[in-house]
Length: 262
Image 1: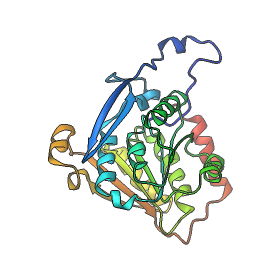
Image 2 (image 1 turned 180 degrees about the horizontal axis):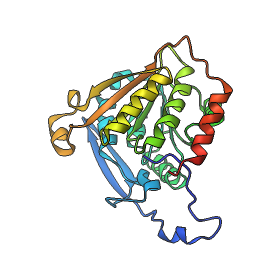
Image 3 (image 1 turned 90 degrees about the vertical axis):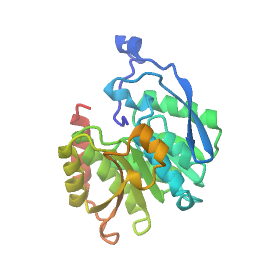
Image 4 (image 1 turned 60 degrees about the vertical axis):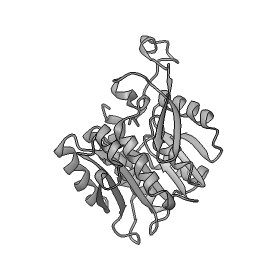
C-alpha cells in the first residue's frame, strides 16, 4: 500500500489532476460470518503512488488472520499503517475498542474517510501518518493514544520502504513495549527485499516470526487467492527494556524519506 506523500495536482492546477481517478465502486468481502463492504477502485492496476485505491490479496490475508484471532483483538487499540482502502483496519475495528487507520497519500486518505463514513463505526478514525517521521508518530500518539497492535498489509512494495516502515513500527511498539505487537501481511516478490526486511529488523532491535498464510486461511480462500508466498510477519521488540533511539538516528531516517523516489 502507498504511504508516501503525493501531489494530487489540486493546489497548483497541474495536469496530473486530469489523470487522477477517484471514482469508486462498492465491493464486499466475507470473513466467516462477517460481511464487510468498502469503496475501492475497480481498476486492476494503478499508479505506483496510488496502490491504496485497490484491495490487494495481502489485505484479504490479513483480514482472515484478524478474524481467525479476533478474540485477541477484542477491546484493544489498533493502528493500521499504509492502509489503502482500509479493509484490514475496518475489519479490526469491529472487534477493537479503538482503531486508527493511517496512510500517507492525500487521495487515499480521502477514500479512507469515505469508507469510514460508509461504515459508520465511531470507534474508527482516519489520519495521515508518514513513515520515518518521529514527530508525526509522537503527535499521532498524543492525539489518538498508543496502540496495542499495529497492522499493515503489503506495505513493503519497494526496498526503500523497509527502513522507514520498520523504524516507525519500532517507535510505535515502544509505547507499550512489553505487550505490543505488529502484524504485517507480506507477499514474497523479491528475495533481496525479504532479506533486507529481516536484516533491517535485526539492526533495529526487532524480532520477526513468520506465520504462513496456509495456517489460518480457509481452503476456499486459499484456492482463490493462493497461500503460496504469503505470510504474516509477527514483529516485536527484541528487548522491550532497551528501546532508546537517539535524535541523530531520527534525523537520518527523515532525510532518507525525503530523498526517496517512491
